[in-house]
Length: 110
Image (cartoon, rainbow, N blue to C red; front, top):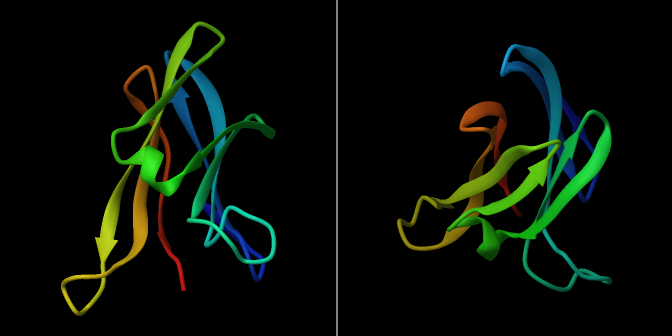
């Protein structure tokens, strides 16, 4: 797994065998979804180097699904709670393809 980071966005790359074939995925997180540091955190999933799915953090709690070459892709995240035990500071995310893990990462949004 490899991490790439910029001042506004962090990405993780991974590859797994899905239905007998190697598939690569990139999962990125950004602390804001809007222009000029506005909006809630946003997550982005890429497959085979292509942007595939964008989701606001709130959309990923129940999971966001899309079809990819006849396979079901699901991006699902759970909240990461801060040391105070109350405030949400990030998301712990997993992307699966046909219920098989592709890429996962934990994002802390500061």
